Image (cartoon, rainbow over all chains, first blue to last red; front, side):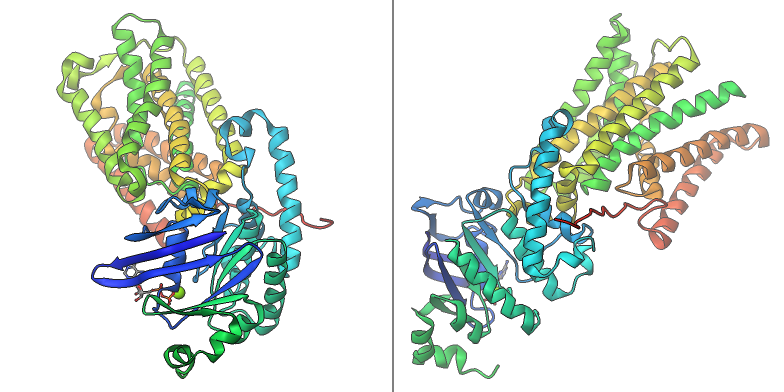
Amino acid sequence: MLTVSDVSIAFGGFQALRGVSMVARPGSIVGLVGPNGSGKSTLLNIVSGIYRPDAGKVRLNDKPLPLGRIEAVAARGIGRTFQVPRLAQRLTVLQNMLVGARDQPGERLFDLFLRPGRVAAMEADALARSVAILKRLGLVEKANDYAGNLSGGQQKLLTMGVLLMSDPQVLLLDEPAAGVNPVLIEQQVEFLRSLRDEGRAIVLIEHNMEMISNVCDVVYVLDAGAVIAEGTPAEIRDNAEVIQSYLGQPA
Amino acid sequence: MIDFAIYALTLVAIWSVMAISLNIQFGMTGLVNFGQILPFAIGAYAAAIGVQYDLPWWVGAVAGLVAAPIAGILVILPAGRSSQDYWALITLGAGEIFRLTMLNVPSIAGGADGVTVSRLPDRTLAAGLAVALCVVAYAVAQQIGNGPFGRMLRVIREDETLAATLGRSPMSFRMRVTVVSWAMAGVAGVLYAHVIGYVAPTSFLVTDTFLVWTAVILGGPGRNIGVVIGAAILILMSVSTRFLAEWSGLPSDLVANLRLAVFGLILVLMFLFRPAGLFPETKRVQNVDGL
Ligand SMILES: Nc1ncnc2c1ncn2[C@@H]1O[C@H](COP(=O)(O)OP(=O)(O)O)[C@@H](O)[C@H]1O
Ligand SMILES: [Mg+2]
């Protein structure tokens, strides 16, 4: 279980988050909604170690996460995607996938030079897993294209695939559906559900309220860096404050 | 003529090792090392100092092999997480500090006059050793570049935050890259000292780093065979301009400066028209049918 308690951060004089708390349980999808600039991405950046909060704690299964240390957080089984997809543009789709696999002997010089058998076995295993995931994402046709040549929507799907290669307990997804075409969104929704059913905890930032109502078990609404409402999607829809601050705004 | 060809081959092989070393750092990892000549100079001076103390040649060779990567770690460590931003300046500075120290402290290795080093007894042997070293460096770079290690290096080159969110420590990869590539350059420096038979600060100028950079940019950053060809082109050009100087009677200073200008021109033309080099990094295509 991922627990965020009373997290605050300011950039210069600007208070981006004020005492935000959030819980994401295994086998559930948590929606994070709110107007642009309300601090959603900043919250994910804190959980994943990109920013260090001024105050507050983040725990995974009751053990504190190392604040501000990206690779140490990732090693604890927390994976994330970014609002603007991050990929190695000049590597192929397949190579980007392979990079997602953890504990590769071929990334240690000793094994790379002296245990080619182990390296090859791991590569074959990672290749098979990559292809299986690419098929699930409908990207297998593109396996040998440069990642930089994919459309924005395909890049978003690919970043999810790379993330899955690392088999994370917690997935932090920053607007995975933005810019993805509606047919693919359907697929993505199915995909998110199956990941949830595998027992993973998912935090999903999304503007599309239909998708949020469709997949989320709990929704948090952020406004100006504070949580103004939390509850089931149905509760959130009926919450007057939310309607005013966010949903009522013309799109 | 044959002598000249063997000598040229020796130089091409030695500078190819330098280009391969920089290629692992810059071409694959994106590390901007403007002090590439430093590990080479350390290797050469290790050989020279060993000879000065009447030690067998291999003591100097081992010292060069060990000292160069240690220097690399010492240079990269203080840069810490922000190494990408400061690496270029720090390496440039470190190379110059080493050279100026050798220049101004004659008690170490003769100052500006330099010191003589035992020369390899026979030119063919020198060429053979240089080619052997080049083949080993190439094989190491290929094994690194084509495997999972090199794949992660390229991720770090493209986006180090991505590498970190995938649970990798970019710093750890940079350290290992530095150790391997500086060791290579160090051994190249040891061999250079024994080929030339003389070590002095004028052999390790910023312009020599510039030569290695031009070779990598010309050949194709990220492509080992490309940077070897780049080095071969530049070294053959350099040695033939020395002939040109003798034959035409132009002052050798002028010819040396012209050579630098030509390297600069090559760089500009490559950046403008062929930024991926003569032999660009290839796309790795893997068969996924039947999986
Ligand atoms: N590194 C930063 N430096 C300064 N301001 C930042 C930084 N990151 C985020 N902000 C500010 O914090 C606020 C919240 O941003 P963000 O979390 O990206 O919002 P969103 O909810 O749209 O994802 C915005 O006003 C943004 O400008
Ligand atoms: Mg955002």
